Length: 413
Image (cartoon, rainbow, N blue to C red; front, side, top):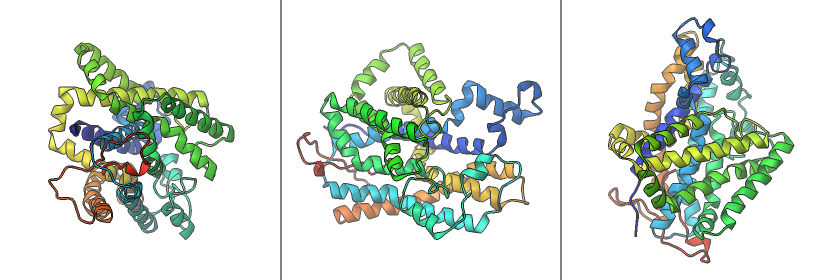
C-alpha cells in the first residue's frame, strides 16, 4: 500500500539548503575564523559572530551538518520511492538520476566558469582566506572545466564551485543505492556490518594517506564510502518510520523538545567530518553526532503537528522545491557578487546581498534547468512526460533475490 508523501521533509530540505547558504556567507568573513573576544567587541557584528561561533545559535550556520542531513534524507526518500511504486530497469533508473542530478550540475559548471571569466578580480581585501582560496583560486583552463564536467571528485576539480564535492557524492551514492535498499530491506545483519566496514576501511585509508577532500582516484572512491553509512541510515529510517513516529509521539512534550534541541546543538558541533580532518576518531564522533541529529530531525518532521503546519506554508514548501538549485548556485552567486561589485559596494555588503539574490537565482534554476532536466529524464525512460497531476513515480516492491534492474529511484534529490 503506497504511503503518503512527507511534505514536511520538503521543509527540512529547504531549511537545510538555506542554512548551507548562511554557512558560506558566514565563512566569507574573516571573523568566522578569528572571532574577537567579547571584551574586545566593537559593534553588533562582533557580537553576532561570537554568537554564531560559540553559542547554541551556531546551528544557524551549520552547513556541514546540513550536508549530512541531506545524505540521510536521500536514503529515506529513495527508499520510499523504491518501496511504493512501479519498477523500471536499472538502466532507466540511471538515466533518470543523471538527468535529475548531473544535468543541473553541468549547467552550474557552465555558469560558474562564465562568471569566473567575467567577474574575477583577484583576492578581495577584507574577506576571509576561505573565500579567496577555496574557489576561483586556479587558472580558468579547459582542463579545469572539463575536470568539473567529468565529476572527478578530486582536487582541484571543485574550484569553480566548492559545494560540488557533495553533489558528486550524492550522484555516485544514488547509482549504487538500489543495492543499499535491498540490503536494508532484507533486515539482514549484513547491512549495518557492510556500512560500518566500508566506513572504517575508507576512513582508515583517507587518514593514513593524509587526505580530506580526495586528491587521487582511489581517494575519491574512499571518500564516497566514508559517507555511505548516512545513506544506509536514511534507508533504515524509512523502514522503521512508523515505529519511530509512535515512539516520538508518545514522549512528553518536554522530552520531544529536549531531543530536538539536542539535535540542533549537535548539528552545530565543530566540523570534524571527512572534509575537515584526517583523524578517524574525530570523524567517527562527528558522523555519530550527525546521524543522531538527522534521525531526530526527520522523526520530528514526520511526527509532529508543528512540521505539518510548517509544510502548509507555501513559501517554505517552495524553498524545499528549489533547494537543489539553491545548493547548486548559491556559492556562484556569492563569488560573482563579491568580485563583480568590487569598488562599487563594500565586499561584505556584496556577500550579504547574495542571500536574497541566491533565492531568486534558485527559483530561476528550478524553472529553467531542473524542471527541463526532469522532463527529459521522463521522456527518455517512459516515452512521454508525466501529467502534472500524476503522483511521482516509484517502484513496485521487489524481493532481495530479484534483479537489481527492477529497482528505480525518486525524481527528487
